[in-house]
Length: 349
Image (tube, rainbow, N blue to C red; front, side, top):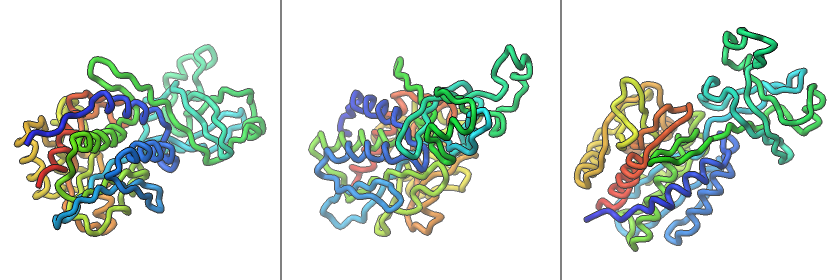
């Protein structure tokens, strides 16, 4: 049986829109709501939220096969206000593993607790070359030396507080999305690209008038970047869980941007051998280009579920993402391969 066609135009449009929605961990509700709106178009899906705010979509199939689940996360790296400095600028506390050197001079949005948005940019505190000379090049790019310069008339802590800014307010870094020559460049492809993979697979099956081979839960996590996203929200009757998250591309890695990847082991240890072999067989059956790899500095939502006591067979697949937790890039070949792998898994009986 051939796999249903992927609507690549819809995939790209959905992903670009999702990437442009600020959603640092703890402030991911707008992105969750956007995915929920997309899912609501399919009458086959029964939607619910966890108490933690994750989105769960259930596609019920009337047979005796045990249900399965797939998870991807919509939360991203970001920051919160840690300190309002005497000059009116902000020190930040990072959410997740954002690299300071990758966001130096980047634009940000500051979201105040009263609903206001204030524009700003990230700079070192010795940014002016005509004041600090060579000192700027030597300044460490770390929590103590990076600051947000607000695009507002403020030169003091009092004036910044008068803008409505408080300690703990959300700061979202610009994604800088660009689609060119089959590539998508943006921050936070980890893991919004894989949320788009799930959406594309659902759309392909629904548009073809088909159904999954068994009941399936789609879990859209909102706390993955801090390690506990899918620790709750996967029903206990689920037999297999496939985490869909980015594949690591770089020196010493097998993964690349043009294939999907099956992760055999990451920082949390090896994944489930039986489910890994099942996914390999499906990829080979459907001529899906894939690689296998090991990720040293990596953890997944599936492992969060395992650590919380989840009793499932667990695997991890995803598209190759270059420069992870930096200015990331993916290619449609790897993204389409991942969607096809999801389709093959969902339709396999």
